[in-house]
Length: 222
Image 1 (tube, rainbow, N blue to C red):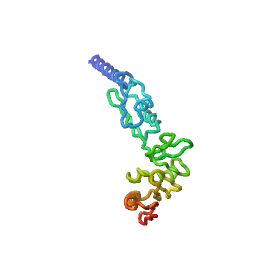
Image 2 (cartoon, helix red, strand yellow):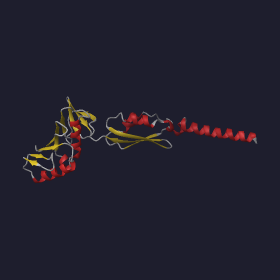
Image 3 (cartoon, helix red, strand yellow):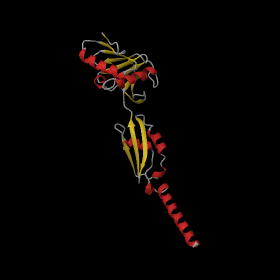
Image 4 (spheres, helix red, strand yellow):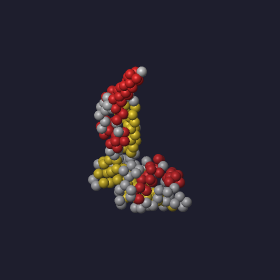
């Protein structure tokens, strides 16, 4: 009886040991493919290379947090989530940063997102993005952050016409439209009201050259 028990213990240990070896050390359950989800402009090959996971590396021992950190080294990405999909796939789900404005940076133009993060540098500003002018063009600057909030709050039908955004202070954001008209928006407060009023005025008051919606309760036209 004792011999039988000892045999069963050894057999169980052997099975457990084999299973552990299969999962944690063997290439049998290694990474055979990497699935990239959510990327629109960043090539999957670049994300996979940045992930730095070798083929057939045991899937169970991949440090997911480390992979996420490496992938986020790509400035165009705002977030990354890494998961194991058994038996041999590493899934990387990313969210790309959305370009909001262009900021002059020497002889280049910095493309920034809504948080003021520089996504990339370009020789010239893309035509679909407004040129942002602030005294201190850096992430966290109150005037810059206010201007970015305003850009994101402007109604779509107006956003397509905005060519330049100027912010001397966080409460002094001004928009210049493609036809030369000027909009004094003020601070980032009450964006829905300002946007609704501005959209209506641009349609009904076409001869006006300046729209001041900084205080939605008292709108000024010139």
